[in-house]
Image (cartoon, rainbow, N blue to C red):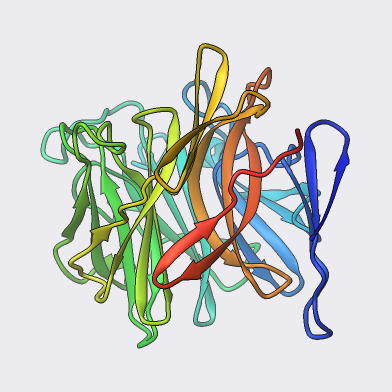
Length: 343
């Protein structure tokens, strides 16, 4: 590994790859992609990304934007996949598009999104027509056009957020998501009917926030991968700054066991000093300019290795930035040097 420093606290890693692997150079943070909750799809030699677009918390939300990159570093806007300005005012999926994800499953592309109609509210389905919930759109091409399959009603029947799909080795597809705006947050799973884009069963509760622990404030941002027969469920919490942890299971329905070394990574600021979470330990790092890191995804990089893709915030910048770092597996545990940056 060769390390060099360039520009404004950017760190470049140069990996020597064998003849079957591509050389992969990356640098953090990536300021050309100002998405929160970002999610990418490597496809036909390019990388496509979606995520929560600014303004993240208030103001007119544009919908779902698609970005494209040739190298994971330089991102450019491609097109709108869902344009909120073109939606009828009566549909439930009108405002606050959060944490969309894009996946190729079999021969189609599935766009998941989470939103509401501000004319309703966050209330439960019996009392509020436009509660915040999860939806799915489908297309034959990664760039669309996408047809919203959950036009009449959300995929989920109660207030929910951060829908993420996972296809198992037997071809079955599962929907993972968390409930929202309740006293206690949980992450759920249910098998998905791909043709009808509806749940085939009642959602099963997998893990919950635990008051008094690192994930005590709430849990969100689930993302599932499978490696060597073990399911890994990543999730985020904002209890102290923002951080990512994970749980493991032998079955998609569980039981799921949270890692004893949670949170895996994260960052928070106290008294103008940044503190990093690293495998459950808190490390003071005054030189770090990045905080609020989380809501991650795992993907296979051009070097053939696993990488995590997540967002963070740089001091003095309002919009989020994107970061990528390697992860690896050791005896059923996940390791990472996240976050990397120059000192």
